[in-house]
Length: 178
Image (cartoon, rainbow, N blue to C red; front, top):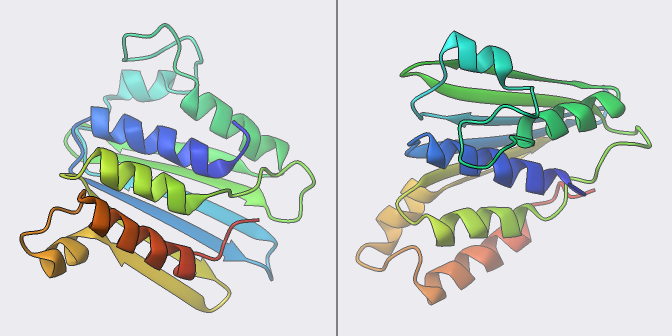
């Protein structure tokens, strides 16, 4: 995958297949430490120890397709950029995927278009709650579809006018892209 936002989308889609009702995406950029941290948490069904032990194997998947490349590719991207990736999970407790990258590393993929990733999740899965936050050396931004759904009242979050308004808002607020 060319950018990290696509890795994040893949992991979030895995969360949805694991019956998550909430996916939380956190991106932290610490320029002083030259560190980019990406975390995706979900409240899905989680994985047992055997599944968790095999999650980095590209030939293992719980899906119908023959390979599960999301976590192995993310791990490879992190390691090539001087970082690492980890997965923590337990049955009934959800899953957390965490990846670190050296921000200035020449092989670090760009973060990419998080607006489109979030819009894809929101429009494609309107019953899913998505919480996004980014932190960049003192500046923070937080977005939560639960708050937005409460403000929208009877208007579905997947309605075209709602999606466009959310997209416009996210384009103004999301700043970590490089």
